[in-house]
Amino acid sequence: MKSITLNVQGMSCDHCVRAVEGAVKEAGAAGKVDLPGNKVTVEYDESKVSLDAIKAAIEDQGYDVV
Image 1 (cartoon, rainbow, N blue to C red):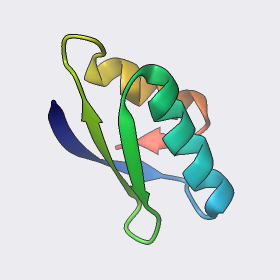
Image 2: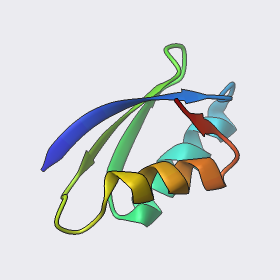
Image 3: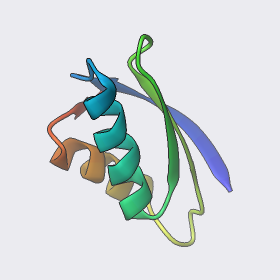
């Protein structure tokens, strides 16, 4: 398993947390949002899902991964 912390812009509430964590889960990874820090820590298996796919899943929810 690999772990990475991504900066995510546009999150402001509990709905945002659920949307981002849900998108990460649907992509095949596990994510934990730090709302005040505008970050999400993601753990994933590189053999099953790419970092680009995780970023795309978050961006598909309307947030910017920077």
